[in-house]
Length: 281
Length: 121
Image 1 (spheres, helix red, strand yellow):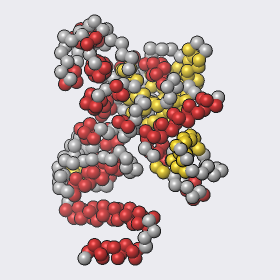
Image 2: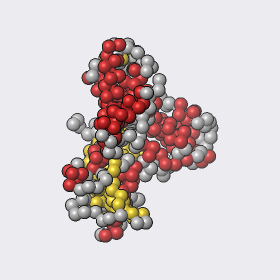
Image 3: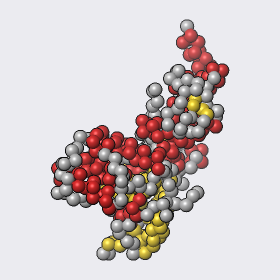
Image 4: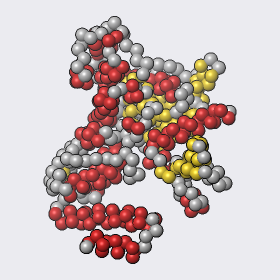
């Protein structure tokens, strides 16, 4: 594997008494699309802000490769902070001056029919996201950090947004890290899926590997000994058991119907299991 | 061009891309010597990760189904003789999954033979 574009080493961070990150480590490669999932408050947004360099850890370090200086890292968040009173034209020219950008591609903004004289205040959530994306893409980023933006976009804008990310990977081998709650729209896209729990990554797998590692059993009976159950949900008389880590040997040992499940449901089970662990702790 | 990917299918996406391109060749949508869509265009059309499309293109090249640099100027290589072999291979793989399903429903090979003869009439 080549040198990572960015690496998190043993990151720890607390806000007052709450430990948000607890020795988290991971590395991300050029041209890779990684999706970070986890329950609310698991520390996903905090991690992205640390990687973006807008927050510093209590311990550990973020190592950026020479190809990913701060000016080449694009950070898009659902808490977008833009100057509300400015016109789009002013925001664009300001951004271009700060990042020494000579070429601004306004095709995405134009496709939404937004005039450059409109004030930022008057934009919808989706229009803001597209403007922010256009600004960030003009930096020709080597790393894009996208903090849960897709869920608030209408289907057309969501397509534009996703296509722009695809283009960045195809053309510049940009590394893309996204935080997602809704998985159905992007389930075919990531190279890697990471789940955060207790301030670290509890899962880091390819989507194919994850589909192999988690299966579902629906039954009225309780599970036999030796079948690892990560999360259980009760639906009336029936129980849904999420089996993790699954291995093929289980099929020969137990006469259970181990069902394949799609990525969105796998993520839901990991998050549900996360809440259970939190309750037990 | 009519390439579709099924998100619900258990088949890995890159294999679905390979299948879709092969089907396109068999249905005449892509002919011997035609350029393949660029990785970037196909990724955007199908909303796929460019790495997935690249992996599929690499596999197609390895199988001798395309030639030239992947991405830019990759061309379909499918002489007519090859297409017959492909058609047969695809039928066989469909047939295998049909057989597996039939056997899991408790049918014997004899039942299936009778069924096939019934359809022929």
